[in-house]
Image (cartoon, rainbow, N blue to C red):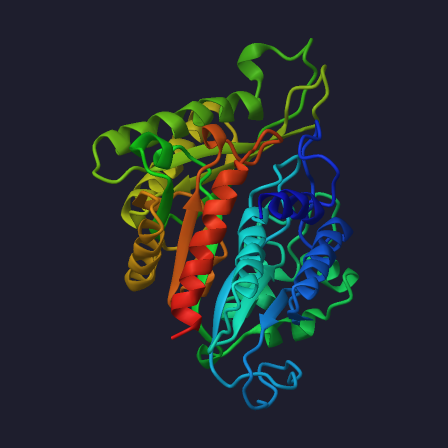
Amino acid sequence: MLEWLETTLKRLNVTDTMDPPQGFTRLGYTQEEWAAMDVFQQVAEELGLNVRQDAAGNRIARWETEQEDYPSVSGLTAIPGASSRPAVALGSHLDTVVSGGGYDGVAGLLCALGAVKWLKRQGFTPLYPVEIICFAAEESARFGVSTIGSKAMAGLLSVEELAGVKDQHGITLREAVEQMGLSWSDITKAERSQQEIKRFVELHIEQGTRIEKSGAQFGVATAIACPIRLKIEVEGQMGHTGTTPMDERRDALVAVAPLISFVAERAEQLSASSPCPVVATASTLQVKPNVMNVIPGWVELGIDIRSVDDKLKIQLAQSIKEKCAELEQCYHVKIKIDTLVHNPSVTLDRSVADDLLQTGERLGYKGLLMESGAGHDVMNMAHKWPSGLLFIPCREGLSHHPREYAALDDLLMGTHILAAYLQGEAGE
């Protein structure tokens, strides 16, 4: 099984090595993402699963039970022999950030496919259908909007608001979707009914070190800290760096510089005084004209704020807005603040969490109940179906980085936990 996991890990990453110097770049709704999804489909079909693509580009691999045919649902064509019972679903994604790692998202699909392979080898026959869902465009790296495929499946996609959102090359989300052979006007047909899915579970690398530090071997999330994301635009005035007196400058970069350290310092203060932590990052910066001998006249700063405590997120966002007002007056610039994302944190189904924890511990692994500081597709699925999030460790907690790594033994552990979970949920 270890050999199959290692080989399939490389296949899903469309690579011969897991150590490319620049990491992996598979942005949402690109040929690179689609190539990896094609491999997912190939592997699933090799395991005897039926695979279809929905209107959002999600690939759904299904292990059927021997039940009666069922009518077409959610715009999907009926599959002969498909069960009318709800599916026990697993899933994650294959897209990455720029120069990302080969485990974020991939690990979840690899272990889910491995669990099906393991169960088939054991002669297990499901009484409920089993699905493995490969979601499209989970990362926000291209459009600044995350989990597009799972939002569409859960009926949470704001079609009109997002159609015109552009990537750095000026391509809109609508154009990107349609370049992949899909129809933007049909994307809402990806939504599925509550009756179609019994439970959903996502396996993911932790992207942190809490499992390791606690002495546990795996984690189960009880909640997800969804973000508030701010875009700060600072308008100053360009000028010659050699001839403009210092007291006459309206330097946009100088004006925004104190805000960068303020974000980190204020988040640390709030975390120290609260039972629940809040984290914040000044994570993107654009400067115009970005020329050595010209005073920066325009700056855009992106800020990401996360906490399971929504009140803390709002408090920090308000502090940032107040700081911007001070900087406007001090540096004689104009500052515009747009809230790109303001998502309430998600509480996951406790019965699913308990089942995952108990399943792992019955297999002899030590588990940890915890929260997730990162968003995942499961947070959208949880709006409609009982859902859970299973974590396996990753080396040094490093993620969104070329050196991201999860040990094969931990991938095997995740595979065994998912397989045992499916035995309980799909074999009742």
